[in-house]
Length: 112
Image (cartoon, rainbow, N blue to C red; front, side, top):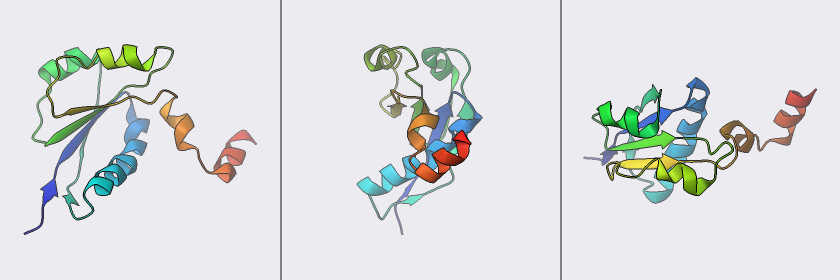
């Protein structure tokens, strides 16, 4: 029997689905043998704390995406106080779309 993991992603918007391969890559870096089951993806409205108060999932881990935007990392992490230990903050200090563009050809296509 193989080990399996379930996870959910709570995101600011639909384009944050781009985080799924990065999260799965990170999980496999920690445990290359684990089987990752299909993730649950939800868009968040309201504050992180308010959303998580009513959010119920059967997933083992919940990754919550929150761009730092103009706030500091420390300020954004304060939004995750008093959340369950199974919640993992995902707080890029640059917009997610910016740090995902690592392919110079992709960037050139976007500029032209």
